Image (cartoon, rainbow, N blue to C red; front, side):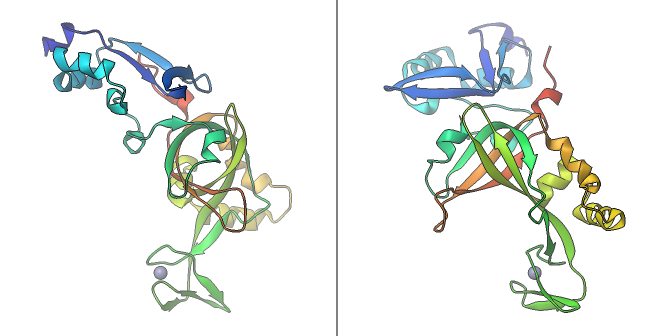
Length: 241
Ligand SMILES: [Zn+2]
């Protein structure tokens, strides 16, 4: 295990953006979240030496392909191998593409529905049919449905704001409560003061890494952006002293 004490010094950048201009790559800070880690005794760094020997390290560095970009993260496996882009570029990206964004949540749009009634089996949206519910996917009627989060977040980075749709798993994970809990609470309070939705304020003002999928809409110039994974707040991450 002394291997990492020898050989090349490893400098790693966490949460930085790669900009390409006139064919040249440059690195830039992103939302003040970028960290420079120099030869730290971390598992990932030790592993790095196993993949990179002295001779192929040189060829990696002079190579022009993206093979010189090796992504490691102990926090966010779903985020590896997806480069970080900005929202401005995201809005111009191609259909079905996947990106990582570092952004801050400005607002949760609670004027629109923030949950949907989900099928008890497949979790997809069910149709209300009087007292019962019907799932088109399962082709089955059911007496109950489970409320599930479908939040519209207004996310901004140092370019432009955009609406991201956040689904149940990521929302409930972060909030620590279920949509059913929030619904029951909102029904009890029964006012328009949004007091009952105060939990959503937890999203505001902190940077997250979002892995998002882009879907072009036929009826709008704005693409639909769906969050596939969301990191814990970047501020809360271990700063790896
Ligand atoms: Zn179903």
